[in-house]
Image 1 (cartoon, helix red, strand yellow):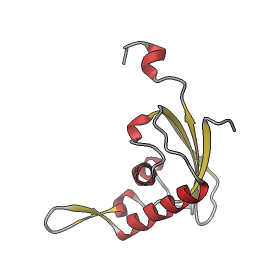
Image 2: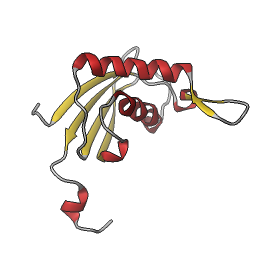
Image 3: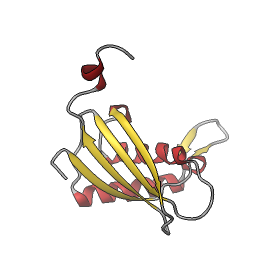
Image 4: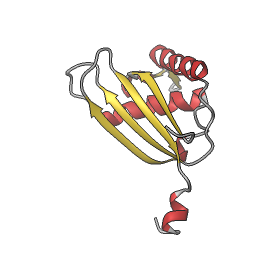
Amino acid sequence: MDSKTVLLNFPWPPSVNTYWRALPTGRVILSAKGRDYRNEVCEYVIAEGVRHHTERLKVEIYAFVPDRRRRDLDNILKALFDAMEHAGVYEDDEQIDDLRIVRRPRMKPGCLAIVITELESGWDDELGDSP
């Protein structure tokens, strides 16, 4: 891998349905599972010395599912992106211009292999001002 690419390995994130908890007051907070996941991601990022990205990014996620249950892969994104932002991998997931998620074979307890690559330029430079 070149200097513009980083490989990260994270545990399987909690479901988006269990990542937050709504209080009776209507306030929404991070659940205990959410806090635990964030902490695991932070510890990994610190231990690996992952640098903070400010550039436009391409993110490839290889999802090794934990079991045979049917799963929507898009449900892993919010917890994962929130935890990576909190850990300082990037400033905001808005920086991601190119995103791919690939389901991989089952592997207990499940994990995510993530490849982050800095893009040379954002889509504005490549496509002009067209949406």
